[in-house]
Amino acid sequence: MIVLKDILYRVTINAVVGGTSAGIGAIDFDSRKITKGDLFVAIRGNIADGHDFIDVAIKHGAIGVVCETLPEHLVDGVTYVEVDNSSRALAIMASNYYDTPSENLKLVGVTGTNGKTTVASLLYQLFKKAGYKVGLLSTVKIMVDNTTYKATHTTPDSLTINKYLKEMNDVGVEFCFMEVSSHGIHQYRTEGLHFEGGVFTNLSHDHLDYHNTFAEYRDVKKTFFDGLSKNAFALVNVDDKNGLVMLQNTKARKLTYALKGYADYKAQILENQFGGLLLKVNDSEVWARLIGDFNAYNVLAIYATAELLGLEKVEILRLVSELDSVSGRFQYLISDKKITAIIDYAHTPDALKNVLETINSIRTKNEELITVVGCGGDRDITKRPKMGHIASALSTKVIFTSDNPRSEVPEDILNDIEKGVEPQNYKKTLTISDRKQAIKTACQLAQPNDIILIAGKGHETYQEIKGERFDFDDYKIVQEFLKQIQK
Image (cartoon, rainbow, N blue to C red):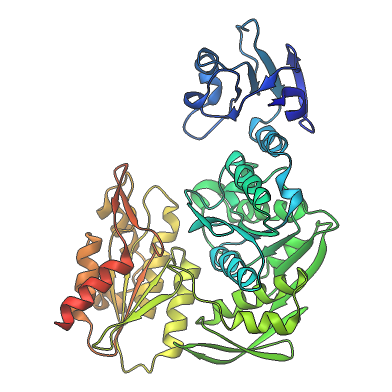
């Protein structure tokens, strides 16, 4: 059992009421999970304010409360700790509680709008193939070496992060690769973690429902690099103009990668086909079983990160050629009738544009490109017409459909998407609200050698409608319909 004063080490404290020598059983910010002897942290959230549940936590047995505002009525025997920011304090306390696990491995954070999952997941895969014990914290899953856990957020809460990092310590993990989202940075979920390095992939239109402006979104990403130590590395894509912004105030060693401009790590695409990419990375050629310009950037980021972490160049090139694509990231299957179906998580305008341009650069133009796409409900509505414009301009046929409508009416979302379609593209489009029916229609429209892109949900195996999650897997559904057509 850890003593409260040790949990509070490095936390900026405004006031303490009560003693700090008591042993603490567990820490939690959910009053429902508090049991006798625990510490409750009152977090101000978007939906609820933890300060409203301090009394509930105490009734459940909390002997300590960390909060931003002390309650009017103080209970005898309970220690109250006042801080400026409970979320930030929680992250530091979580690290202390689990014995600062990030310091016992080499933790690399990957941030950006697109490519986080691919880069982090493939780095996990590469280092596993190299013979190391490795951890992964990603949108798709959490890996503690060979043990898989289900992921619920791109960047989990700080207690969950440190719990898994401690578990990684316990089994001897040497490297961990972690997706770092803008939400996670802004909510201090990564505060108090020791990073060996940070990777910036790119920045485009996303999450403006949360961050309000693109500048705010960019600056939140930048704070991750601002917080890196002088012993860490900061690796950024300088073909994206925001790459150099990320480096402006960092104390870390500054390194760059690019396909177009000058950089420490350069790549050139020699071949680009459905079978993969032939790249020239600095002075060496490598074949990767990944597709498209955007994956050329991902491969380059992986190569550079592996080298910065001490792997030999020749070994990295060999391992890169053995990497498999990530679930829901340009994942494809080819039916017996030679219809290609591609499932991709592209849910931002830039990601959708990248995927469609990649397909168009590879296909012969004798085939149809049928795109099935929607936009999530209760999220940034300004990207909807942009998605509609891109999909209709770069496809030969488009079916607009539901993504995760959440609490919104699907038809309202579809109307927003349709606003981006230009008159010359109207005849290309269909609107089918039911996603399963939309995928079925795409399969029925497709002829031999045609390509179907199902965008937006990727690895997700559910559809969220009015607060409920229903089983829904794009890959399994399109596979099933294509089999039916073959009969």
